Image 1 (cartoon, helix red, strand yellow):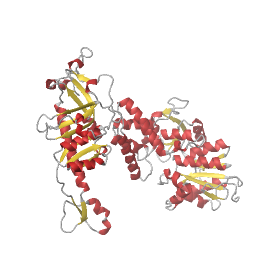
Image 2 (cartoon, helix red, strand yellow):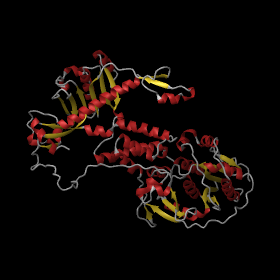
Image 3 (cartoon, rainbow, N blue to C red):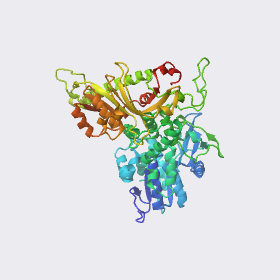
Image 4 (cartoon, rainbow, N blue to C red):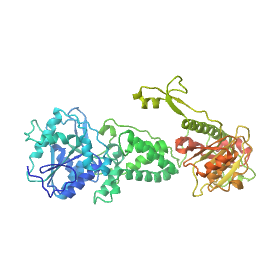
Length: 609
């Protein structure tokens, strides 16, 4: 073995004589970056990769097709009639090692002799995203603190790899790229000369396939959008943002928003973006990772926005322009169950507006249409307006739910837990009991009763900085159980759905009981202090509430000055982030119909959906 070459720069990896060991996590982008950087900086004469020699020819053919992704398929000797699938991805560190070695003129060595049964070595590694923060050396040191269990099969496998490595040119500088869980077994095997492994080398019939572009997100380790960014990054290792996982996730969400607006006609609010960022972070931490995967991104998109947006996120992440459905080899549409074990599924139900009429069973009456263009608009006489009663019932019920939720949140804030002594109070606090299980005590919880009820309810869907919601109105409840209401919305007269019937979208609204007390909120000079429409509604809510508490639901809490204003009124603002509410329910109540007279209510059901 030659001594350590002082001209060989040390990037923080392991060295034994002329061998430089670079352990990696297969399939992970951050390790592919480290491999490419090490080869370009050190210029080794031999690059050895932990891949079976029986796959060499097929693997090199797959590399020639890059950036198109390929799949190698060969029979599984353990189970008859079953195949083994091996995706060849750009962001895989073994793929990158061979590509960069060939570019730099280094010899490539497949160092797994593929003799005997290859052991399955289950492994869990720290999230590779940490490499960019702590460096490769500290990452490897942290991994080796908790060594993986060994067996005779693993020792034999490592001995076969060591035999191949010991057969290289003793004067050559060799970079060895192998899995993290085989690092220590191979290092131990390299301490003494290894005999040629006994057994017959496998004669594999390897088939090269082209995966269909639609299935890439299911079968690749890193999702295709990230692989595409890595392909752009690897040319010059610059700019580094292209290969940053979290920046790529942000770009996936941004591009999905554009498709969501084009296909569903809806926008993603900034509070939803913030909530998705928090949700994906929590999902990643639950899995022991620092950055979320594609499945987590899709789950967060569906939970915070809806299924349509989740579909756009999945489709954007699956985008890989280099992949073609038609090529010189066979194209297959694979599923995740065929490639991986223990897969997870998510079901998305898209609900998009259709440009043509839906097929319907016989017997259903078609929705009425205008006989002449503009006929329904001419039905508006401008004398009066009124609401649609079924919508009133829905929004009144939801207002009562919001009042209960506001009180429950305040009760949670004022609750306290203490060790059980003589009374269970309001019940056992399971969370606190488990947290202090080492004390051997049971904790109970007590909720302080809240004095007063919730009067006004203000819901802000959009603060309207661009002045999109131009219709401002106040209408009064018609009976004792119907609230007075002030709201701003899109103009209902620009979207006519029936004779004298217009459809609009709330930007925000105020509800207050008892009814028939509210004057025109939008022209009341007492509220001119307000700078925005949500602030004017909040001031009116404080003014008209007959109870102490006022519920304010929005993406952001009101300015601190409104706490002082509320205290002067003897009121308390109970803020609820709108992200805590169901997106589907909010979408349902956001539509409002304006009728130009009470007579329209008789026929409104034929035009309102």
